[in-house]
Image (cartoon, rainbow, N blue to C red; front, side, top):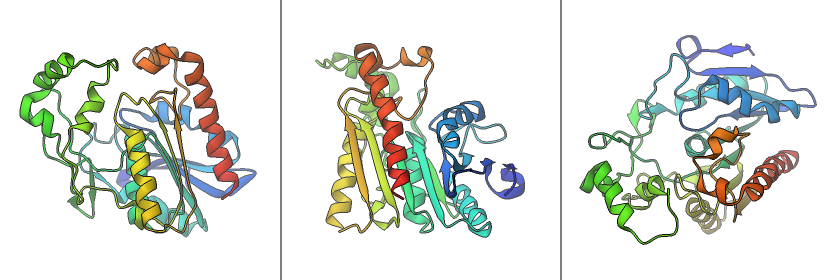
Length: 290
């Protein structure tokens, strides 16, 4: 394995860290939206220090990669998995946070060599690229083999526009303020075509979410996935955890400045810190059982 892989030369962009005590277990580690190399390397340090082999992979926003959540190829992970297989690794897991968690689930549903998934604050449908100014593009977040994966549309935003949707949202009698982004997904038109076919995975899966996720309805997604897998008599290990007092910053070591943007962090600071600590331990426990 090389220390660094680039899209231009290798078809995917990543940093490689060979493990020590658990080097036969490889985690393709991904962050979420808007996270550059610096953030990805910093927040993946906990799992590298634990002795696992880690491929820190960028799926967008890294230097030289697209800055838009649009048409991100599953092939990035597909080629990374092929490289790991060529290098003799058979225990290949994938980790993602937020949009990276959705990408991880999608990749695992399409790539059977992925045999473990750590999905933190996920969503279970592929959606269209959101737009603050102007109408949504209709372009899917992800693509596979040169074609956009079918995507759910932000119906509410399409009808009222971004600022119209915001005005409508502010009229609502709700105690849960600052959850406007979540309302986009709650008012999207979800279709079977855009659903991530989690039942096709060949992997043990850990699903983690905060009950009051102000970014998108990850706890709803976790419950849906759990139900789908149960109905499918899914033969692999499934563990779901929904923290009653936590924020969308699960799976990270956020600076204090980040916490100001999340209502749960202001309301339950101690509980949010404890949930983050427990989330890491749940990941390690799941990895030990692998």
